[in-house]
Image (cartoon, rainbow, N blue to C red; front, side, top):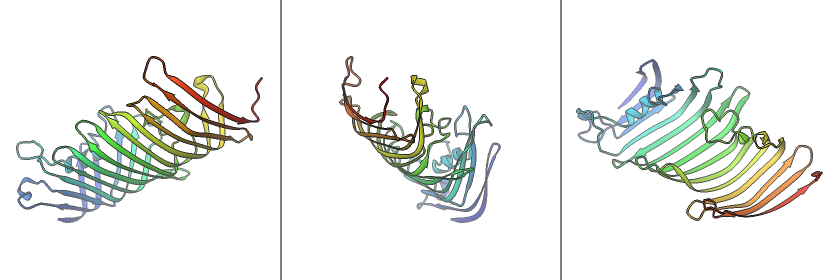
Length: 277
């Protein structure tokens, strides 16, 4: 089925979708259970409150991708949600917090009847000052157990003002400039058990004041690191910082038995133009 200028509503939210499509397997039409739902050119704007995104347009899209039978139970069959050439804006309840907006959004989610899924997202961040770079995320896992692998790629992406939406993001990294690189993260039961990160940031700042250290304005910063929760090992292959005042700092090292009673640390520092007073 293909429809144009579709109006969807959920509580106080309304969505106008220029183009919508639904694909039904044989016999599924009577159950109103499409195997694929697609939207093109949608403009989504929703607020994250105490109930999260459930009472929002995104919650409505999720409901469409999880069809219900006549008894109210979910239809146990594979399903797919596809959104392309769209945009969305996420807001917090506090109007003083700037919204998070993305354009050129391409989203695809394929979920099996047992809860396993494959998903991908690609979009360009929109800022008042212009574009904030592009981010791509590929995910595969199990929605029930929260076991998954995330592959993240960013290109000139700005992390500024993301903390209200990603509370796990350290405040020190909230304004590290334009970031380019890759991160591969593995989660078990929703907790990070492995990570592999290779990132470079340009024209940013590290806010180390909570640790009693100054704010460091830098021209470039790079990190290559690997974390394994099974072995409790954190390996920093490279960490380099070039400050705007000409000072440089390079750091590499390892932490073993990270989760044990006595972690073992071995680090190597190299710097230039640092005062030792």
